[in-house]
Amino acid sequence: MSEELDALAAEIAACRICRDRPLGGEARRLPHEPRPVAVLSTTARVLIAGQAPGLRVHESGLPFNDASGDRLRQWLAVDRETFYDSSRFAIVPMGFCFPGYDAKGSDLPPRKECAPRWRRRALDAMPQVELVLAIGGYAQKWHIGASQIGTVTETVERWRSHLQSNSGIPVLPLPHPSWRNTGWLKRHPWFEAELLPVLRERVHDLIT
Image (cartoon, rainbow, N blue to C red):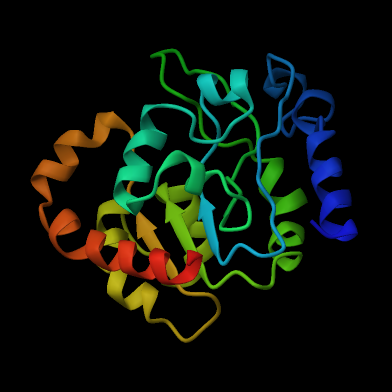
């Protein structure tokens, strides 16, 4: 990485805002030690914009090092070595730290402190990015902006218009690759039949 990106990565790794200065006061304090997880790159032309690390990623420090990552790599048709090659993929979630669980045992949303502090700086430091894979509603709302209307399903259904947009970097919206979304994939066969071939072709062209 360049000195500028190295310095930014070090700042992100040292971030403790959600622990020390949480939005909403002490009651919103992150209940565990932060461990920001992000992969910045001076050469990667594909940016994977996820939501926030899960517990397994928090423990390992490796993004998408879980069953969701296995499915995402299957969607992309790349192996682990290629996926974790920072010269090919940048990985910058909406929240860098595991946010914890809600009362039902599901992952909480990305922390609100993270994106306003870091996201624009991270993207500005990677002007070579030519495609954003926006995974889930939080990433889609940030990267697609005003044209993101409706549910994640509705946004992904309009994937062609977002990918062909002339305003800014092309964005390809994706559902979360969680295995909890297996039913969603079965109900929407067009995702695998129509979107995945385009996703794989675009990614292959940009990483080779």
